[in-house]
Length: 260
Image (tube, rainbow, N blue to C red):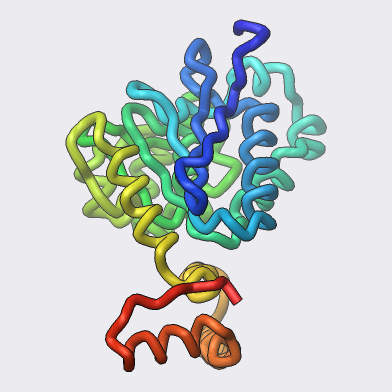
C-alpha cells in the first residue's frame, strides 16, 4: 500500500452530512482491524459533532468491503481470537446514535456485510452481492453474521448464506429486507447522499430516538420495548424542536430545527 494512502477518506459533503469512504483498493477494502478502528473513530467524532446529522459509508465501484483481512485471520489461534479487540470496535460502530447509510457497489462479504448490517438504510447498485462466506475458511461469522443476519433476512435465508457461503444479489437482498433500495450501478452513493440530506433536514433528536427505538426491536421483549418507546416519545415533548415543529405546522411554514 502507498504509505501516503489514507485507508479511510473522511469528507464533509455539507454541514450536516459526513461521508466515509473505505480506501484499501489493493485489499478489496478488506476490513482489517486498523481500518475497522478508523471507521469507529470517525463515527465517535461524528457522534459528538452537533453539525453532523447523518453519515454515509461507501467503498469503491467494485467492492464495498470484501470481508476481513485473511492474513490477519491466518496468524490468529483460539486465544488470539478470544483476546481480539474487534468486538469492542464493532460495538462502537453499532452504537452510533445518528442515522447511518451504506452505499454499496460490488461485493459486500463477511465483515463487509456485517458492516452493512450496522447501517440503518442500505442503497445498493444492481450488481451488488451480499454474503457471509466464512464457512469456506472453516470458521463462522463473528460480528453479526449469525446473530443479526437472521433477525433481518429470516432463518432460512441466513442458513443459506452461512452454511453454503452463497451470496445474495441486490434484488434478493432487497426482497429479504437487508437492502432498502436498489438503484442502477454507480448510483448508490448519489442516492445515499440524497437520502442523507433528506434525513439531515429533519428534527435531529427525533431521528436519533426513532433509530434507537426501531433498533430496540431486535434487543428487547415487546412489553419493555413499548414502555421504552413511550418514554422516548414523551421525552421529545420537552424539546425546542417539538415546539418548533408543531408551531411551523400550524403556521404552514417550514420548521427550523435546532437539535434541542
